[in-house]
Amino acid sequence: MVTASNFIQAYDNLISTLTGIPIKKIVLPITVSKTDFLNDWVKNDPLNQTKHLVKDSCMCENCFQKKSNYMGIIQLDVKNNPFAIATAQAKKQGYEDFSEGSAGAKKRDEIAEALKE
Image 1 (cartoon, rainbow, N blue to C red):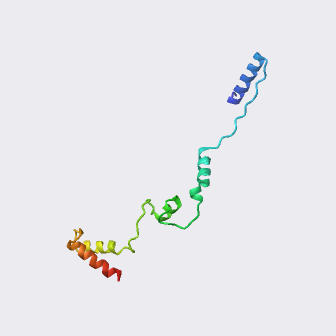
Image 2 (cartoon, rainbow, N blue to C red):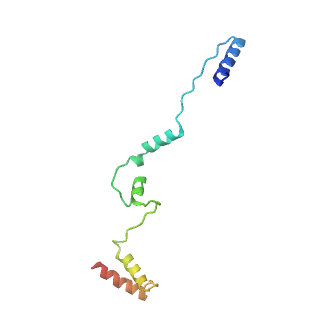
């Protein structure tokens, strides 16, 4: 049975016999696979190794993963913003125009002041 290694050995023997010079075997180093290289890179990435509390201002991958949902969307919390809650409540009551001096803006300000207290 002829295999690739048998063929290469026979070819090397033929060449060395014809030239009278022995053929040196070259052993190529085993290369790292692409997945191993990627896994090592991810493990050694300094942004992934940083262990700190999740901060809103931090844009590292760890903080982003903690702040975002499964779709990668960061939903802001509106509990601390009374004007956002007041605007939503005024929209439910039928107000659409919130420009300065309008009835919607006055209603929004009234609701926001009540929420602040």
